Length: 169
Ligand SMILES: [Zn+2]
Image (cartoon, rainbow, N blue to C red; front, side, top):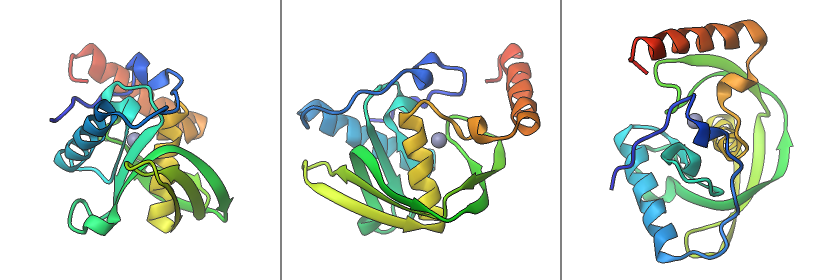
C-alpha cells in the first residue's frame, strides 16, 4: 500500500525515533509499504519517519527496483565506519523540488538488521554512502537542508514558506 510522504514542516519528521523491538507482521507490512512508496515516488531511499512512523527503519535501492540485490531494508542501523569527504548535489522526497550540494563522508559502513532479523553490514562509497547517510539522518530528525550553511538553508526554507502560504506545499 502506498503511504503519503510527509514534507518538511511536518512535526513527525522532527520526532525522536524508537528502535524496533521485534519484527512483527505490522513491521513487515510497514517495510513493504515503504518499498512500494519509494519506488512509486520514485526515490532511491525512504525512512520510516517520512511516512509518519517514528521507528528506526529505512529502505534503500540505488537501482530503483531494477536489481533485487540492491534493495536493502535497514532496521536499527548504526554507523560502524565513516571516512573521507564528498561534495554532491542532494535532494529528498520530503523536500520535493529542491536540491543542494551537501558535504558528507565519502565512505561509510552501516550495520543493521534485515527484515528477517539477521544482522547485515553494508559498505558504501559515493552515492551509496551518501544515500545511507541521508537516510540515517532522517532517523535523527535531520534533513539535508539542516546540513547546509545559513544562506542556502534560509533560501530554501523561505521558498517553502511561500509555497506553504500559497497552499502549494
Ligand atoms: Zn530524504
